[in-house]
Image (tube, rainbow, N blue to C red; front, side):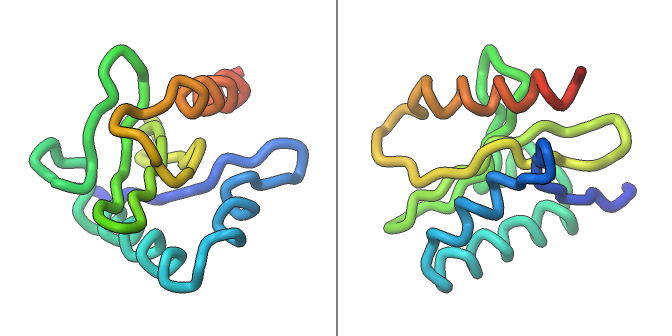
Length: 112
């Protein structure tokens, strides 16, 4: 299995993922970094408790569970990269539509 590469969505020389990560605590950022490393090393595995496919979307959701409850929405590209489209702290049981809509907007920029 080829190693995956995690990259952040960027548009017009701006990276909104980095902007969001700057608002997180150092501990939260470390957890996110560790999760992305795990994805690069192990890939996308359906049984992985930290990743799940969002139904009716092209997105996967990387999850940091527990007190922080951080989510990263991403797509797996043909060139064996995953592109983090959006990252947020989840405050409700269901992933809010506005968070998915923002990822979809960024995805549409990515594919065109």
